[in-house]
Image (tube, rainbow, N blue to C red; front, top):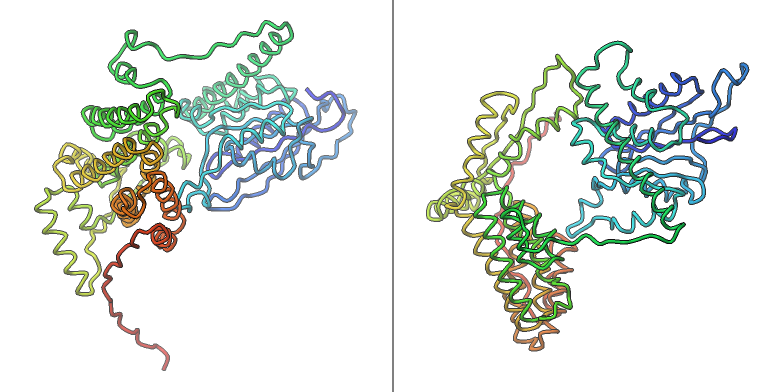
Amino acid sequence: MNQSKQPISILLCALGGEGGGVLAEWLADSARRAGYPAQATSIPGVAQRTGATTYYLEFFPVPLTELAGKRPVFGLNPLPGRLDLLVSSELLETARQIGNGLASSTHTRVITSSSRTLTTAEKMQIGDGRQDDTALLSLVRQHSQQHHVLDMAQLTREAGTVVSAVMLGCIAASGVLPFGREVFEGVVTGESGTQPGKAAQASLRGFAFGFEAVLRQREQTRRVEELLSTDEQTVTDPRWEDAKEASNSQEKALASFPAPLRERIALGLARTTDYQDAAYGQLYLERLQAVLASEQQADPAGASGYATTHEVARWLALWMAFDDIVRVADLKSRASRWSRVVGEVKTTEGDLLRLYDHFKPGVPEFAALLPPRWAVRLQRWDRARVMRGQLPWALPLKIGTHSVGGMLALRVLAACRRLRPMGSRYANEQALIQQWLDAVALGLRTHAALGHEIALCGRLIKGYGSTNERGKDNLLHVLQHLAVSPSLPDPADRARAIAAARTAALQDEAGTQFDAALREHGAPARALREQPIRWMRKPRSTVQ
């Protein structure tokens, strides 16, 4: 607790829908209940995820009963380097406030979530536009007197509430404010002597999770300081169990891979199994085993840390779980999605919630589920329409997910995952995946760097629709003209050419830089595609 006569200053950062305003009210009400003067102000953020709404609060550390009728004068905005506590539900927002000079390594305690909600600028990048989490965490450590980093998003999901309740628990456990835990919990429950409702019970769970998480970190810090002070610190590194001690089939499967790969492969296995079935997950492991065998042949000592297999494990899982209408229907009809929507709109008992999902599947989506012979006929018919100047055929749909009929329609479509392996897109995707993996294996046997660069080209496959098709075309062009380029007999030169082409392909959607990189390294640019000309009627003028 701050024993000086200066107000305790707290800055809260929350994104839209996270209950930042409620959190500020909880804190102000806690001060009033405990008999301390307090003031709260807020600055709205900008829409489309370019900034959080910030709430600035000041608390005078002396009870009103001891002020003899005097009232403290509070500020309306935080002063640089004078914050006592900075609390944020998103890591980049924490870094933004630190960048504004509000936090100080000698004065400020920081509580932040390790989870990320990508900004609009990050999402707009064709390549990986995400900020480096390691750099953001380093910034937090450098500009805080003490810091607590925890996954608030995970705690929120476990509690079934909104993140503001978790943040309140973190603040209560930090010890910055001179109020006991019971004061904060009393504000959450509302009227004393009444049974808390379901929303209040969920908020109390979130409060408890946040409180215990910060309390554990404070206790761990205290113990480490005690150990360091007596020079009795011991460090143990967690290790994977041996294959003979694996207790289930997944652990046994992962035990056949080197330890540095297991965490990522476990994520990929979970994704592919959830996408299709256990056999599909086994196919994922078998493909990785083939790549690993090629890499071990090229690098028997494992000096590179199996970097190529590590990259393939990531991009292969994403590619094998390609988006189609079956996947979309499955995700939109899951119970977790309904729970998330209910939490976002903050419904209470007695509220009526209706949820409509809009779809516009076209010929590519329907053809994807048909056998190749039927799919070719359907696509040929649609291309003929387009060449005549008509728009591609599509079926606009509006489905009420809140209704029995709407949910049943989505679940029936999601059940079509059993038919997915018989569809044309499944066959095409698997053929392209195998072509890429064969190129990686061949590259590894030729030159380790060449195989690694081809593996990294898996990041070209992303998105859906035209973006996905363009990425696959770019990958095939690289495999056909750079990976085996006769004009680049040295494998190291081919590796550098592929790296340059891949980087250029991720720079712009039009592919101008990609074509330039191809020509620079002796490969032909992509062929121009035919585009139909559509004649539009000139609108009649209404001016007389």
